[in-house]
Length: 317
Length: 264
Image (tube, rainbow over all chains, first blue to last red):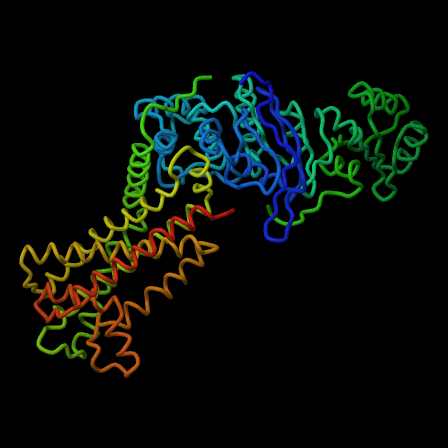
């Protein structure tokens, strides 16, 4: 394989009974990059992952991974992919080490290789200390790590991560992000799904936005964020007099006012500098700000700008 | 990136290897799942003691003492209960996503069923030993020769295989682990209670008697009882073997088919 495209999906369609879940999805993933599939629950993200990992046959469409067809060469594909599903698919009763060694054997590594890989992965994922504990006693973050480690046992060049950080606490999420970035630096091609724009922004080289079984946008995280609108600064005032003065002071900029809460929402177009300027201006005019918050554009904003409707959970994937 | 996957062994070798790995996995579960281990040990003792002392005096079993009559019945009832563990384990694997993972590997993923079924065999041997030991303490006096004990073991394992493969199907069809509970209950309870496990069928109402005397579990129990304590065997043994083989021949390929189709 000399092509620099790892995954190629062309016009993928899939229905369950009468429900059309994927209505002709097309995109490509370049070798050694991270592509994020961004979309709400029920958009069809998990179905795409299942088709790619040969769990589900597509109804229509051409899907190739490293040149292998998902239908005709399923056996070949299973040797070069690693799948980490939405739920930590590990054996609760086995220890972390036993899980890894078992998966090594099932990936058809030799006994010695399986042991070696298990040791390496326990180390890489910081699980050495808990390696002899049953997985059912692991925390949510540890489970996810073990789950991801399991999918890397055979050092696959391509991995699929289905919502790798959903349900994790902030610290575990950040540690998971770091691991995913490390994997990319090792040259692994990664396709992940997420509901969070922030996550796609942090990790992905390219983002494909999926809604109701269709690709509705594609681009770099920056391109998408620009379409989703700017960061917004929200200022709250304790006294009405400050509230009124503030409105006059920054009159003309892109802002919206909430009379009920005595707050002003300002669109930030030029980043931190602009925030500082606004605060300085307030300070000089002796306007007392009670509190402030900065809002980043969310998946909802992307959706609002792309489709005109907010994300809605159609049904559980 | 090095890809470690070996390419120099035959696919048949790897099918056996997959089987072995998953059997070891399921066997480890027996001893790592303490709750299951407790019920494995306690349930047969409980049933044996309760039936022996609560119903024992009220049930006329002809020439045989009640405890001698009872052991074969409870042995098979426990074997049937034990063999339904497969359906719970299969349903759990499906729900946890482990089956999805196995299916994405270059392995023979349906061997996961074989692992659970083989674990049932081991589990039933353990609970049978526990139960027969307790039976001996409370007056069970078998007359079986060594050869007859091996025949008993053979029938017990064949019966366990038949129930395990059938319950694998239930595990694959169930929508949740909870659903498995009532499905196996509906499957195992009528078969084990409407049989000659605890009382002779003579005094049952006519239709129930007709069912109880001709259903497979009764044949299995009567055969085992015959070998254990010398009650008449008749054609029970041969019918027991035929029933079990038929169930296995149907359930084995059917469960494989359902396994491949699941989730698609």
